[in-house]
Length: 97
Image (cartoon, rainbow, N blue to C red):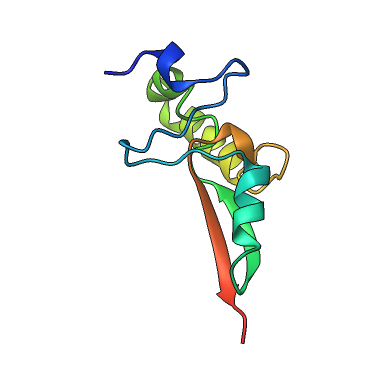
């Protein structure tokens, strides 16, 4: 297993490691990459948002509290200022004709 100091730079940005399967980008970098393709971006959605960081807390919620959490998540998953907190972002595109 890689240690944190091996996978991040001095600004805590995750380094690209060719041997690894995953690629890490800031939202701004991702948008620049997407501009290279003949598509129109319709929406970007934070898949898990803050859930990954709050997993233990969320798992202890009552059913009623969990419904409130989901309502919060779904109302905030498309906020451009919060998308970068999510480990995964879904980009919904339409191919240009």
